[in-house]
Length: 219
Image (cartoon, rainbow, N blue to C red; front, side):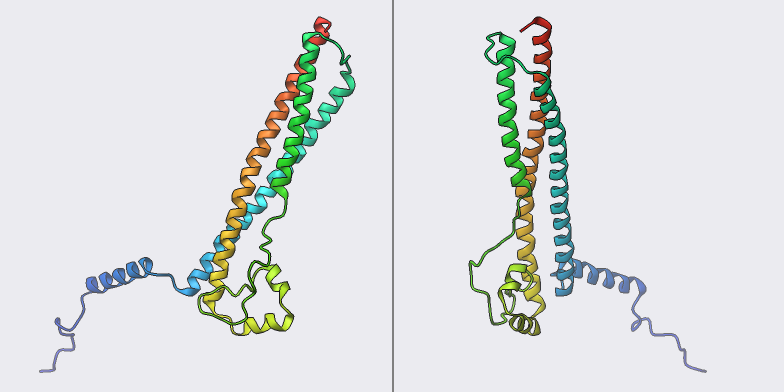
């Protein structure tokens, strides 16, 4: 009688056990430390997201400047058509003068916030000398524009010739931290900027109503 070709039940691994082993390996892989290549991709993606937020903040600041231009144009028209006697002691005339001064102060404050929101950031400066020898796990400062320009072309090439992946991921982590801090400062200034737009609009509306009442009641 020919021997059976079927595998021995003792030696054959049940499909359920193989699936369980694969699941356990996948859980271990997901819970464990990221591979260097994966760490690099995650840092690159996160840095791209943060720079997109940076660009969005600049666009919102420029849009706020457009709104401010429209509000100030309306204020100029109001000032030219609503010329009044600034020596008048009528309560409405005094209120209008106070509102006009408040509007001017709000405009100056607003301009300051616009400068804070749009001003360049990210210049690290030469706080430390640039590294000259490759060290594992240390940023070699080869990705930031001011660091690149501070080296000669040959020195920059030499750094890249011996660069390690962990050098790059360490510097990407540093850049991500820097860009994130810039975003925090920019969005704080942007919030104050739009608060200023609302304040200027409210002051101009109040001044228009006061001027209408002054003309109506002969102030």
